[in-house]
Length: 256
Image (cartoon, rainbow, N blue to C red):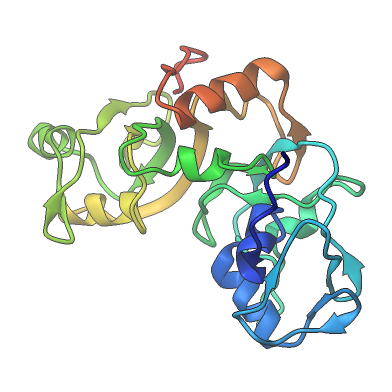
């Protein structure tokens, strides 16, 4: 006997399909931009199944199509959102035409550049963003001034944020740069709001440039800013391993 499909709240269904985050989907619904079976819906309690035709701004999104996971080299000055009331460019405007609806995995600050993943695979983003997932995130960071050995030790042990210590950070000094200001390579295993800015400020340094060069073992390599590409089967398996707690980061180019 086939079990009857359990209806989901509309915003949950939209997030599941990768249209937008649940909170962003709620804003789209309240704004009157979402329809179900041809009728505009503004009630957040509305429930749907996979048989219902969901559309945003008139474009049907209930069929997500093939599974899709890709990487974008996010430029600075681009916002991690589907839409922006201020009219700023969004990361979704940089994605290639013809891909299924996907959602971004976590986010990067407006002026931060580098690795940003997108996926429509159910549960993948949530698994990668679990607090205990231990997903490595590798950043190249330019700071004002030179990091002292004592400050480096504090970062490596863990800086308290929001009343709780962060997990230890791997810190390496990068060579070949301006000797008056340090370039550092940091590997984090968690992602708090403005994490790197805050831990650097805690040891007396401001961040002047920040780029993420690897997330969960997926590296930028030589991708230009604004470029994107689909992940291969091996990379997707690596992400699935992290999402389920069964993987370790591969060593590639010193990142991850």
